[in-house]
Amino acid sequence: MPFGAVTQLLGIASPSVKNAASFGSTVLRLPAGFPVYQQQMVRNQAIGAGPIVAAEWCGTADDEFQHTATLREASAHDTHFSRRNLSDPSTNDLVYHRGTYFNQIYYLNNEPDLGSYLAVPNTGCSCWNPRDRNIDQHVSSCFPNPTNTFWEPAGGFGNDLPCSSGGNSERIRANALAYVYLKLKEYTETILGRGHIVLPPSSVNPLLGRPSSPNLLNDDAQYWVDFYTKVHNGVTVGNCNKQGIISSAIRTIHLHKYTDDPSELIHANHTPLDFVGFDAIVIRAGTDWYRTTYNSGNPLDLDVLLSEMGYLWSITTPLRWAGGWASFRKGLSWWNSYLCWLTRRAPYECNLQGWDIPTGHRLHGCILEPNVAPYTTNSPTSYGAHLDYTRNQWCLNANTMQVGVLYN
Image (cartoon, rainbow, N blue to C red; front, side, top):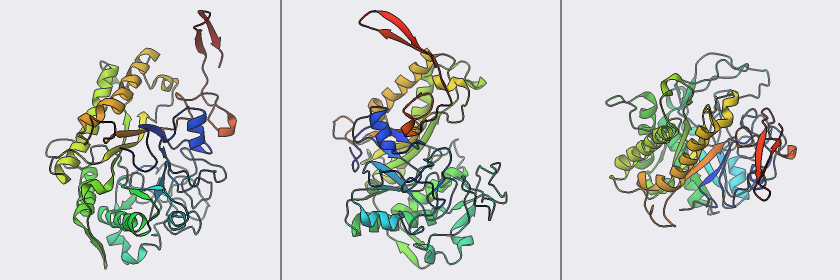
């Protein structure tokens, strides 16, 4: 079932190109209505706009500031993947954006369950690490004692980056996240009345609140138990409170899932189809946990959004051309089978309402960085695509039954 202008099952995530939607339609030939997931409100290089290295566009603001199928990140604080942007900076923040345009899609925070290390102070560092521990003034009055009500220690990464000042890694508390989400959702969707949608945060682990092992509720799982319990039962922080919402009101279960590296020794005897099964199991396990916990075990009246997916992003060797596999045949076998499961089988196995009818709920997947290998090579430089990998491409001319080669 479409949410907002998103009507297609497959889209793109965090391409470091200008005008990502135009790149998707022109270079990748994706049909209209595909989702574009980004870690900024409006893509540009201002330090207050968001992380401007690696997975985001590093140039001037793009032209798609009101593209209705773009999923825009809102945040009350700096993280490894965001900058506070509810009302700070004063332009292209959430308050300005939602009050100026119509039918926009927002989500609150990319992987908030992951902690972040502060950047080196007073250096103008504009890489991933947060600038400070300040809270956006749009919600800061609810947290007069932020150390005990907003922040908590949490495992993170990025301490080895040049901008990191070391110290402690911290994240927003689950109940604070739930309050900010409910506050933004109520005003943006209901009170403002401009056709906007606010989606829940994305999780690092697709299992959400389901223990990774029996009787072992790890820290990540407990975080999502606390968050969704507050979202559905209501939450109070200081003198601020919000009533809970029903399960279908969140519109999507929001997950991330990268496929494991098949070159690891532990996977020596696993086939491409095994890998499809591994991913299907954990995605289904996360949705089943939510369905049984908050929907009385009934089929879910919402979609599933896999807003970051694909081969493991940390694979940097030429094996990435085949998704980490040692041969193109195995890589294509895995990829085609995985896409087949995502677009056809997943709604049934994840117990989504209407899985058997065209207008029913579906799983939507966004492929990370489709402007780099193995998805794109030598694409038009006007899109700023990465050209760090080249290959020879063999082509069959079906009319002449001759084979030719395009070098590099």
